Image (cartoon, rainbow, N blue to C red; front, side, top):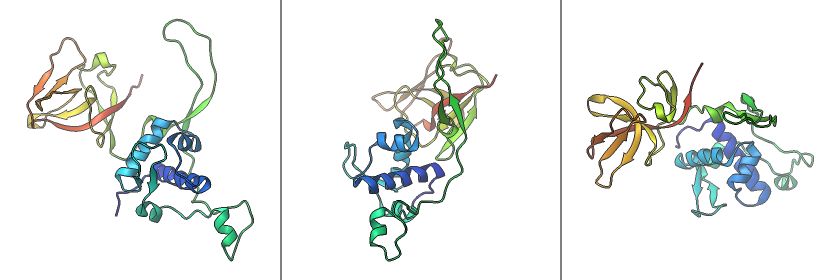
Length: 232
């Protein structure tokens, strides 16, 4: 049995199936994003999670239409009746209608009205776009918040009292800001810089502080920072 699927991931998987049935081939990330009203990067994150959980598989790595729904994915999805299947059904229902998955409660959104200058003045813009709050502050799938204490990351625009959004399932790459566990279970927020010999530097974003050198095998990473929440 696969790992539990979130409501948002079920929406992505359902949209994937619908587009695949309509087009006769797997949708691209761009097509999925347009269908769901989100950007390509957001879709990619959900697709990666669905693949890790066993609901999607990449049959042709690198191809834009290389994904397919696994047996587990088909078992999880509500059945979607296409017009083709309706024609062959003994109890066909009127053309142009289909059985769809149960409706979800609309996600809360905030309107993005445009851009505002923080340097030189610019022309005021209002081009409303609804941004799902889940895309700004995702929940589930290993995401959690930590309140920051101290100023070691101040030059990365992370101040004491801010909350950082952490993805504990994401694998860190060089220069990511991570939640690191040192010896004696001491936790710290630093920039991750791995060395070829297997050791690691944890680098603060504060010129007054020095990097911490961690020998190989002595570092535990408990997540990568993906966002910052600040209240005024």
